[in-house]
Image (tube, rainbow, N blue to C red; front, side, top):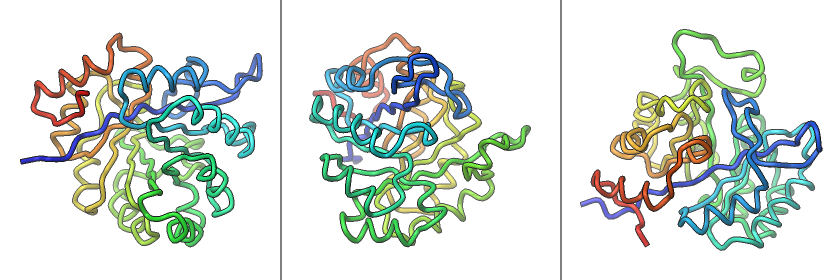
Length: 260
């Protein structure tokens, strides 16, 4: 019998507004800003009131949002909520990670740090524990179109290279893996189950499935395939449904989720 609760994790991506220069939450499509959706602390309060299991905040605008500005925003969010909080975006050294752990976040999400300097990620794991690091791997799952140059520069890999990357990431003391299909980001066409199965075959660590969720059916399919959690951004911005409705629907499909 499955005794592990499956987690539903809202993901807030942030960018700086080009008109009023505020830092705000956004929806993305193919990892590019698609629509500004509001103030992150307000969003976080709403997610907590709806019983989200955790929250992930990712800085997608490293050119104009500094680590210091990002830390201030994270501190504002952390002071408003009590649920576990993970953050990512440019956190690639022990010193930077320490800033966020001192704020009180539970986990950092690292991707470029693993690509560019895995030994530094290992230092973070040795200091704060493997359970504090989510290794993110973004791949291009489309078989019909090539990786856009802007995403290739960010380190997005082809899906065929996913197993190798998953194996490599585990050498640096990580505690959890999040996979992101950039070709499905913001499309609401469902997650990439082939990639999820590839990942599960190459790790015993918990796997967070991300990108592409548009219907309850898609979330059910991911959990039934074996994901430990789903990270969802666009879905909650466009689907008129509460967390409790989603949880009840998942429970009706036999998925073990927290209901209270």
